[in-house]
Structure formats: C-alpha cells, structure tokens
Length: 398
Image (cartoon, rainbow, N blue to C red):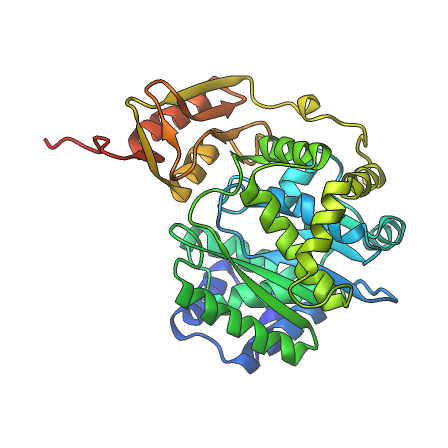
C-alpha cells in the first residue's frame, strides 16, 4: 500500500491536497518501524540509485539550528583526507537561512549527474553536492514541498527522507547529528534520544550501521547564518586551522565518530585523529581539491567571497551579560534579509550566552543585497530582540 502511494506521488497521480492528507495522518498517528522501512524502500525504488564498489560513509545533521550548514564544509574534507569515501549529497534550505548545498554553492557548482558524482568522488574521496538534480528518492522533494505550507514534519517522514537518500547513495556507515535545545527540531534531550532510537531501529533493518550524536543546539552554531557568511567562516577555519569552538568541535567530533566506525581509531579516540588532520592543514588541502573538481577556485580567500553590501548593526543599549541568543529569531531575521535565495544575505553574530558586553558593543549585523530587505530584517530584529541581555527591558505595556 505504501509503495503504491509513493509511486502515485512521483507519477503525479495524487494531488497536493491528497498528499497533505496523507502527511497529516502520518503526523497525528505516526508509523511503525516496518512502515517507515517500507516507505524508504518505495522512495528508493522510484528514484535513481548510485552504486559504488567500495564502502561509503556519510554524516547527516537533521538541522534546525542557524549556522549549522557550514559544519559539513569542515567535516567532509577531514574524513576524505584519510581516504575514506564520503560523497555527501545535501539539501537546500527549506526554513533555515542556509542548507549545506546553498553554502557550498557559494564556492563551487553543486549540481551534477550521477555518473559525474561517481567519477569526481573517486578522484577526491569527498564531495559536497546538491541531491536535487540526481533524482534520488524523488518522492521526498514532493513531500517536502507539501510539508512546508502546512508546517508539519512528522518524525517518521524525516527519518524516511534522510535514510532513503542515504540508501540511494549506497551509504553503509552513517553518523546522524541531532542538535537539541530551544528552537531546534529536537527541543529536549528526551525527545532527541527517542528520535535517535528510531533512527537506529530503522537503519538496522536497512543494513546501515548508524551512530547518533546528540549535540548542543541551544544557540546558533558559530558566528554567522546565511550562505556566503557561513562559507566565509568555514574557509577561514580551514585555512587558519582554528575557528569558533561550536563549529570546530562539532565538525571534528562527528568526523571522529566516522573514524571509529571505520576502524581507523578505537572508540573515544576518533576526535584526536580528526583534530590532527584539521590542525595539520590536510583538511584544507582536501577541501581545495573538492572545490576544484566541482568547478570552483581552489585558491579562494574568505575576503573574496562577496556578501551583501547593505548592512546595519544592532548594538547593546547597556553594560550587561548575554543570557540568550535566540535560534528562531536569528533564522527569521536572516531569511527576512533575503537568505538563502540571496546568497550574500544573512546575520553575523558577535556574542554568545555568557559574553560580557558594554554599551555600544555590536550584538548582530544584518547583511542584505537589497535595501528593502535590509529594512524588513532590521524592523523584525527590533521586534524579536534576538539577543537577550541580563536586566534588559523586554516590553512595555501599554
């Protein structure tokens, strides 16, 4: 029955209203493990499958945190530098300021055919491509398009979406990152661990060896949100071999889990190998190869990456301490500024929770490519107050 539904979704036999009804039923009633597996198998069978003659590894984040898309631009070259095969296909942003494909597209082409993916991956061992042109699990793109306006993303459908594309790419070892915290898709540790168990149960039936990493997602990852700003931050980190700990530690921890699964390190020691590769410059050399094979400039510098030329800063009104940086607010402001469609739009974040600030210190800076979008984003920022300061006035009534 599930196969026939997926087949009719792909062939266009079902209207968007009928698909929405199916998704809402899934949202309210859920799916069993076997039903999720049947869904994945149907999604793979109705699309393209890319085969490799060797073991394929991958890392996937469920997202939901602004600034998260840049992490893949560090973890993929770290893994590929050891010779492990990690041809990563990613999505574009749906509700976030940038997806990994949006951010990588600032540096190089991300749209390729299946035979090109195979050829390039064997040359560089790692890729950062968009899955949208490959026809992997095509039903997923239709489900996502219908989910967006009705604002539902059933956990069962999210798992099917992620794992179907991994099966289609012949992935055998997978690390799934589940950011948790206020404003994420998994707001509590309890929910994160429940989601991780679902991933593990489904992946076992599919023959994929999987480890889940529950990571901190209570505030933005790094200091930028938006394609070009995040690309700059990732390239700076790779070139200088240092960067925001929330970015570097996360990327190296996830890459380290892959090394442990591959048997390159014993459990608990993968991070050390990832750190050595990153700090030695091998990750940057590998990233240059990936950028070049995908048609970009391997000698690009962070300052070469254009960002929006319409900017405005929001400063601290008092001497204080930062108590919270709101994920949802940063996301909405970045998107109001034009991200991810306008690659140079987004938000630079100067502070994190616990930082001391003085009156006049910058809290965030909004980047836009159009004056109208800058005004829209600035007015939204004044309303949402994305950075909360100790003792600050939140609202007056009336």
